[in-house]
Length: 394
Figure 1 (cartoon, one colour):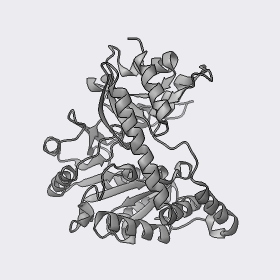
Figure 2 (figure 1 turned 30 degrees about the vertical axis):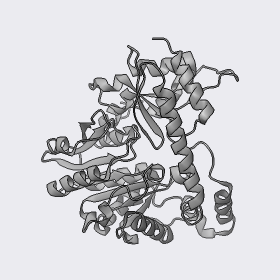
Figure 3 (figure 1 turned 90 degrees about the vertical axis):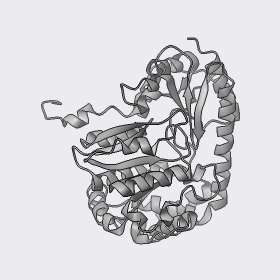
């Protein structure tokens, strides 16, 4: 009960949003100008979109009446067509506009996909460490998240996953490049998961929020070139990271046209349609910011390399995996990361998320790791981060 009214028990049992929880550790603290807070907790751009993109959105706000109206529930036709064309070219396959939905960010795309697949009492396999919002949504729907522990290389094992598929399993979820580990899943590994899902008659949800920052050249997998790929694959994408549109909430879901009829039901009841200005900005970015995005990717990869080098030099610290926005780091201290992370804020002015936020409570691996989101820290900041961690007492 809350204030005398009923409370949904599955919502009450879900853990609080981790990023908001971590922000509360800052309450009452101040950081001197000479030693500012180093925030490596959140995986989102902190800068606004590039000026030409903002100008295009401002022009639409002033001069396009339709920019202020409801749009089609599954997204604007021009953006759906652009996404279909881009994914067809990038992956060497065929994606039709009718196989694309535009969503209020990639989290909503995941929620929509799960809602079309599973009901309370069903199961979905999540590799661990998992993206916490995926786990939260499953918990709030009464769907059991089945942990698939990754190996020391932070890659999930399809053979191990096969043993976890029970009669109520509806999907396997892969995030690549991964949040929180940064691991980039090899194409042959993704293909094996596809074959497993196809053989067992379940879905493979492939979240590629960070695909624009993959270090590899060429397509990261060939699934969209497979015959009847849409009988198995549900692919997710986000414009937030690519064009710094986090506040405008624009994502995409790619699946079969028959599934889109079900996705439309979900989207119509939770948002009706995605922000028109966000969609206009996303389309303008796709059409005009290719070179700019390539520069953003190069900058992120440079920060990744600097982070790996700096943290690997610390005695006892080990970077287990790094890519896109993240490094998954094993710390050498005796205390759990759940206690270490808030202490780092107080003692050294570093805000990072503990591994326990990405793992089942009974998995001891969470206590030994931190997620470092380095995308918003420049080279000097990364060097300073390493120095502060070096001085962290046990």
